[in-house]
Length: 376
Ligand SMILES: *Cc1c(COP(=O)(O)O)cnc(C)c1O
Image (cartoon, protein in one colour):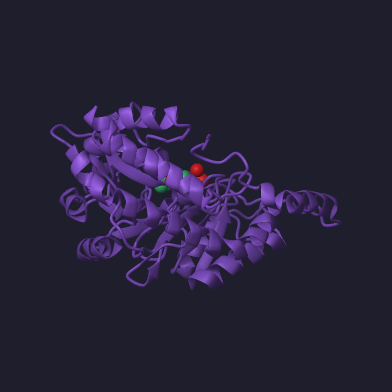
């Protein structure tokens, strides 16, 4: 048995279609390879699906975060509160604008940022809160939105891993002023290349992001630059491919959720044995990956590897412990839950084309570790 953490054949089923698109778009008379009709149609389709005011496709999820923060005019001297446990773009996007990331601790069980700790980190310089959904659980957006409201702060939702998730009746990405999705290969709406979108319920913010993604031009007057922007444009071939893949997304997400539900049921009794599964249920869940907390994480990882099951330990260091961001930690700052998560989190495969027998094989391997192996 060999079950890699991410599958090597992600787009195999769409190979013929992709090749056809390469030919069609590559030889079309318009010779339009970025920001053309396919990109506009993809933006429109996502916008309608979400009920957003605007969706703006751009070069990557990271760049989507940067463009939103730039559109909000976050810059030197400003602070943005982010989770201490998460991926580098959360802090990197802020630093790239000359602003300062301030790290808040996370919930020890769900690993998403703790709204109360976010609130404690607010200072007179704080301009925005930027929570992130992580692995399998969405951040507590209702409570975080209340904190933002109370302090008059902007709210950006890093929903890069949560496309299709919903919390308190609001789709991931739309709880704050703006959210982002990433289409990098392995994300739930991944594709064979780089890309992402900004989703927003604020049409004016959407307009600004649209300008910033293409060097500050407004889309009408070429070579008229209203603001300093970026090259963060979207590829027409990828847009056409995503339009082809979009109708199947709901089924693929449903398959992920069912695999996760099976795992969660099979792992319920492992808590007493040092392996904790994400909380059950559908509300506020997103299964980009399925992440356990294991006391003996590295031993579990080795156990799974021996049985041919790939796993992944994201993120082995909290952000403020990373060499790149350590200078933003303040004396006396501590993130005990983020440290614990970094030591214990282990993600297992949850991609939709795992067969039921694969899923049970993985579940059984985890159970064996917790219930049998750990005693030996
Ligand atoms: C993947 C990811 C990003 C960045 O997206 P890219 O498209 O890889 O730039 C940002 N935030 C989170 C939480 C992510 O998982």
